[in-house]
Every structure is written in C-alpha cells, then in structure tokens.
Image (cartoon, rainbow, N blue to C red; front, side):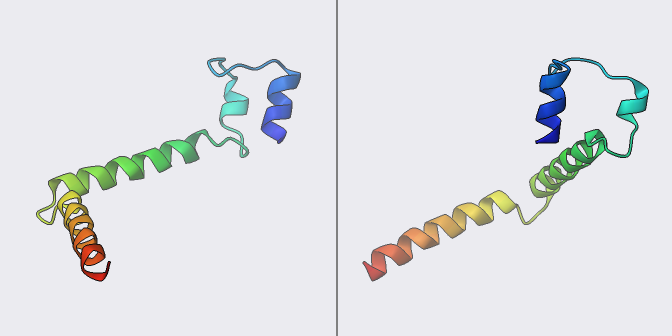
Length: 73
C-alpha cells in the first residue's frame, strides 16, 4: 500500500530513524502499535495473577471438549 510505496521509493529500512516531524505526525502509527502491545501485556498479567486463572479454564475447556467428542463419537 502507501507505506510500501514510500519505503520502496525512499529505500527505507526497518531500523532507519525518522525525523520528529514524521514521528509525531497525525499519520504515524507508532503510538497505536505501542498501545495495542500495552493492552496485550496487561491482559496477560491480569490472567496470570488472577485467582480464576484463564489458562486453567482453557485447559479444562479442552478436556471437556475431548470428553464430549468421545461420548458423541
């Protein structure tokens, strides 16, 4: 898309630094990506520290599904 065209035209690479004007522009997606990462990390921490551990619920759900499949098979 547009990002790829600009990168190809100006030979931009992943590690290349940009000016503050580009970094802080309204079209920059840097902060959106950072915010998404922050929410994902917070969800993992909450699931890990909670009393109702999400991981154990998922494991229980998988075991119940296997039992149901055996019963109906």
